[in-house]
Structures are given as C-alpha cells and as structure tokens.
Amino acid sequence: MDTAMKKLFIVFLIVVVTGSSFLYAQLPKPPAINLSGQIYDEYDHVLGWISKQGIVQNAMDDRIAVIDKSGNAYDGKGQRIGKMDKNSFVDAHGTLLFTVSEPLDQQCKLIDPNGKIVGIVDAHFKNQASAIHCLYAKMRIF
Image (cartoon, rainbow, N blue to C red; front, side):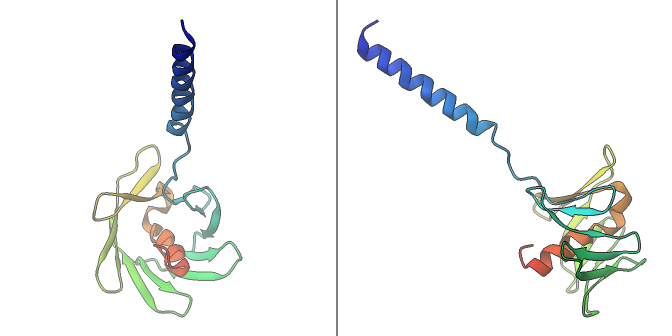
C-alpha cells in the first residue's frame, strides 16, 4: 500500500470514528414529571415540582401556579392560564396546547397539535400535566 492510500485510509478512519460519536450524542429529551412530582427540563435539570394538592413550585420554592381539582390552572396572581380537560390542555384563550396520551409503561406523552412530543408525565400526574406548561410559561420558553 503506498503512502497516499495509507493517508486516505487514515482520513477515512478519522471521519468514521468522529462521525459515529455524533450519532450517540445525547439528544435533548422532552420535559418530564416523574412519580414524585419533580419536573425536569430536557437536560434533566430540576425546574420544580408539583404537589399532590396541585401546587406548582419552581426550584427556588416560589409558587408558580395552582391546578385545581377541575383541571383549571391559575398563575401565582390567581389569573386562569388554562384548563386540563380529560386528555388535553387548552390555554385561557381556548387554544389547544397539547393532548395527553394513554399511559404506556406508566408514562403519558404530551403531544402538541403538530405531533411533536413536548413532555412526558408519570401516569399519576396525567391530570396535572399542565404543570410543565406552567413552569415553562413562567420562564417564557414554552
């Protein structure tokens, strides 16, 4: 094998090795609520949590929202910001933000109108899935 072929082969190996590492890079996951009510962002950072009483707090313990037993979500000032119906969440203007899938392995997917998964919640928090929206709306990135 001549030196030109050896150099070409080495370049090829470098491209294959570095290219394959990009395939295994961790892609962001959708925000999630786990069984204990902790709310994580797409990079597994704790944003806050939701209590069994429907109180949504951020990681600094500030009360962000309250979700009542009827599924209405209210911000910290008492303004209604949306409603969780049986399997969907609509904002205060009636715009559908996401639907909630049936549980699979104790997890429900939150799917926006375009079919994108925008969150995952433990089945125990299915009716309080809007907690993810409450935190993201407060952070102005949802």
